[in-house]
Image 1 (tube, rainbow, N blue to C red):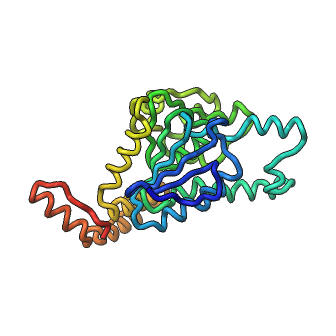
Image 2 (cartoon, helix red, strand yellow; image 1 turned 90 degrees about the vertical axis):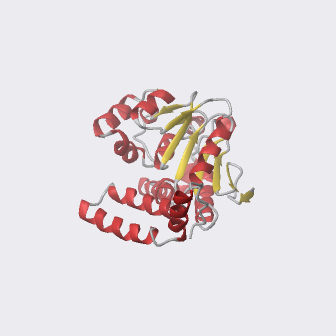
Image 3 (tube, rainbow, N blue to C red; image 1 turned 30 degrees about the vertical axis):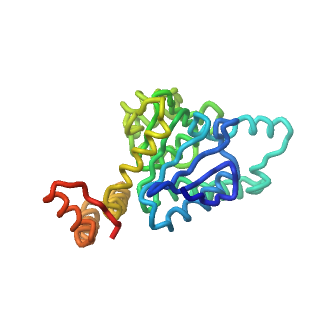
Length: 279
């Protein structure tokens, strides 16, 4: 296991075999977001993208929660004493603060969406507000039985950030996304599964190990193919059919020219499990 320097203890990262693991690490605040976490993502994601051994990234949380979103306790403290860390970091005027938040969103949600390999959110517990948004930015989501998903923004008088409105609309459609944002229900893991917000629900006991094993199994698949698949599927959200067909043709020719394709074909004929090398 190789540690990745993030510059903060609020966000940890390491590589376990072919899986990069990023962990929200403020369990005393249910992994609520901090300024240091944003910087940590800005450091960790490029480092993992540059590691040729990383075929899948898993994002999870320490202490039984995924991420509670914004630190509401800190917000209240700032409101009471008249100070605001965000103002100190981003500037006091609305335009500067909006620019700073947009930049941080790009460091996290956009970077996850554009990450070259699959990114899986593993939810051991609550994913709320911006924590939900970051989970939605991932390609797939695994949830423990006890996990809950809560939009939460309306509960604190906010409109939402980190791409949740965009990602949720892609998953459940406009009308359902509006309902969830406007009413902010506490979705159980089964509710989230039924809506297509999470892909699989795993038992609470041993969830961390089971989620990592699931990601390892995904990382064992043909990595070049996975990369092109992610590109194709991301592109399909916004492009027309002709563009999608042309891009698929290019990607298919490239992947079928790899050593991994030749290995997969030989393994199929020989009735064995293929061993992929990413070439």
